[in-house]
Structure formats: C-alpha cells, structure tokens
Image (cartoon, rainbow over all chains, first blue to last red; front, side, top):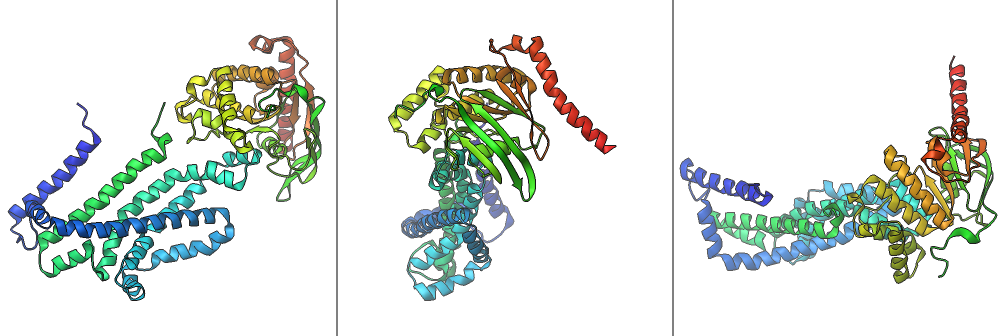
Length: 250
Length: 267
C-alpha cells in the first residue's frame, strides 16, 4: 500500500512530539523549564479563550500587513518591470529596506504611531513585501522573448502584454514569494506586539514569560506556529486555483 | 466583421516588397541591401546558414524592428507593419496558462473581435483541423507536433492573408515533421495564404515552396531566387522525382560553394 504525503507529514510531526515527551520523561529537566506536550496541551485548553481572542488580533494584523505587502509588492514589481528609471530608483531602496534590523525599528514605530494596530502592520509589511516584490519582479522578467515578439507582432498594447502574458507568466513566481511572506507574517506581527500594545499573542507571550507560566508560553508558541502553518497550507491550496496549468494534465 | 478568417483570394498582385533593405546591429551589418517580392498566394522559403539573419529578416517584416535602410511594403502599407501579418516565432510560444482554445483566440482578443464570434470561429477552425477534442487541454499535455499545429492555427486565426513562419518544424522528429508539412499545405490551400517560411531543411523547402530564396552568410544577401516550378501534388513522391533531386543538388551547391570558399580562405 502506498503511503500518502500527508501521512508522512503526520509521522514526522508525531515523531517530534513523541521525542519531546521522551526527553522530558528521562532527561530530568524540570517541567518549569521544559513542560511535556500534554501539560502544554492542558495549558492551551485551560486558557483557550485568552489565546483565541488574542490570536484573532495577531491574525488581523498579519493578514492586513500581508494584503498591503501584496499590493505594494505587485505594484512596485510592475513599475520596476515597466521602467528602467523606476528600477534604478527603487532597487537600492528595496535592498536597503532589508538591511535595517526591523526589531530595532519597532520602538521607533511605537513612538511614531502609538500602541495601536499601525506599528504592527508596518512591521509585517517590512518583513513581507520584499519576498513578494522580488519574486514578482523575477516573474515579470521571465517571459519568453519569443512570446514578447509574438505579442508585439500582433500590435498588442503594453497593457495587453502585461495582462495577457506577463502577469500570468509571473504567477508561479508570485505564489513562491507569497508562500515565504505568509510564513513571516504571524511572526512579524508578534515581534511588533513585543515592543508594545494592548492585545495580541505577543502581549500574552510576554505576560506568560514574566509570570513563569512556561507551559502557556509553549502553548502560545506552538499555536502561533500552527497559525503560520495553516496560512501556508491555504497559500498552497490557492496556488492550485491560481496556476492550474502547473497541476492539470488533460 | 465579415472579413474575419476569410481566405486570401481577394488580394492580388504583389503582397510583400522589400527594396534594398539593410540592417545593422551596433554598427555590425547583418542584412545587406535585400530586395525581393512575394506575390499574393505564393509560398516562398528562405534558406541560409545559421546566424545569417533569417530571423532578423522576419522581425523586420513583422514590424518588430525597423530597418537601418531601405523600405518594406506589406499589403500596400509601409511604416507601421506590426499587426499586418501572422508571425510564428521559432520557439514554442503557446501560453502554458491558456488552454488550446484560449491560445488560438489570443490574436482575435488583441484585435478586439466580439467574444461570441471569436469562440465560434476558433471552434470551427479546431473542428476543421481535427483538434476540437483538445480545445480544453493545456499545451503541456500535448505532443510537440500537436503544439505546433495549435501555434499554426493561432497564427492563421490572427491573419489568414500573410504568414511569417520561423522554422516551425525545426524541433520535431522526421515523421512528425513530414505530417506537419502536409498539414501546413492543407491549411495554406484552404486559406490561400501567402507564406514566407524560414527553414534549414532543403527537402522541406522543395516540398512546400513555389520559390526558394537563398541567403548568404553575414552580412546576408539574396544569392539565389530559385523557382520550384511544380504544380502537381506535393507529397513524398514529388521529393523523389528527378526534378526535385536536381533542385536539392542545386540548392546544396550554394552552401558547399560557400563552405569551400571558407576552407580556401582558412588555408
């Protein structure tokens, strides 16, 4: 019998949990520093309402930042592809934006924008828009030269070339960039919340750490990582809808 | 609207005229003073050594680049040539994200045909050339020969009157190539298209053409304009006739002559 891919994934994750349980049982490490998986699950169940409400805030910040990143990234990539001048102006800024330690930028954003949603969303954008922009630029430039000649021989306008050829050709690249960004999004929102805020998983994590509730901290880390994983899976599902030609063979 | 996908029978006389056309790339001459004409309905092949500028010549006629010198008149117009002919580039240019039907409607979409008519004509064309069952398939699921058929239909749906084909069968195996050559003959007979074909294959040129133009090495000139002069059925038997074999010999001699010249210069 052939074992499916999801079964192998389950075996991998299940194996890690079993290994974790064994380490806790036989290593002698205090549960105050390393709780066992069942205690973590118990902490999650006991604090479910707190986790869920704050997760919604983090999810909102992450998704809003991700949406802004997509719009910014796609528009910037189209601009870079369309004009050499735009490319020369924005390429160094794009690279520079990634050399800034975003963690260090967070307190500044807090001073400028306060404790609300804005600084978190800006941090998510700073983390997420670069992979989208880079992947989209690659995709737009990847169009076969002969396809470009074909369209020009048909007297296609620049808008027609963009809509009928360049954008569809860049979709596999875009989805690759998006799958990287989506994994960053939740973590970036939590980083933003660490610096200051009222709600969110980052705030609860700080509170749990300060009150030595390590089991809850573990539960929050695992829950936030599960959120990222689910978002990533959604992107993979979306990929099949957006680029069916890479999957369908009639 | 009634002119969509009509055969070329209304166009008579000279359809393409090149007059002393030259092309330089970064001060390097590629084409040197080319002059020739194509009458409406003619099938003309261009043969020349690799890299001599055959594809550049097609780019000029398709309006993708402008000549450094000389003039090109296509279907009575000069200047803006883009959109005046059906051009099929050398590599596979079917859009992988479009189905067969969506691929062949690309040209009409760009020309702004009404959607209903575009679909109707495209389906009719697919049915006529035995590709209807592949209408919803993606190109990646088709064989190389089938993909070239679809690309040819896309070209003809964009412009039936004048086709520029850049080595359309170059990447196919011998058997598939021969069947595609016959298929192209069928297409051309149906629409009475004027065709300018770039090829490396002497037999292909003899099988399909009314005339064969031979280009020299760079800077390319037309060194011979050979009339095939055969009005009978074009098939494998025709290629084995004495006339066809003599033609093959004559065309090949132009290449051997230039190669011998190179060898002599090397010494």
